Image (cartoon, one colour):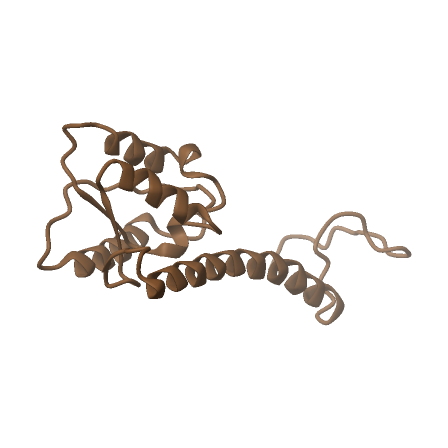
Length: 166
């Protein structure tokens, strides 16, 4: 969950947990949760506290799990991060499960290869779209709605105290 101010931890975690439970139903149980708050998906897993803990636990010989299930691809990966994480987990003999793959990811399957490329591009596109949308909305608020968004007043204008906000 990247935006702590705009998302509720319980709701976000609950939604992702529900997807994870559905993905593994009939195949196993979840024994641990790793949930990062306030971390951009663009950060590598080594720089996200919970993701780094997960990768450290994966290297332990007495770990309690043999698979990792991701509740929401777009919150877990950005661009080509997926390949690095999958490779690191495979070295440890750990499968990576995604709801979009309807189970464990198999990169020997051309359909799964295409799916991972699509999901990586979609995650990157979501970030780029948000970066474009915010300045575009601010421009519209200024030019169409006549709103002043702060900073220096436009040339020829003076700021005056209008009293308390109604």
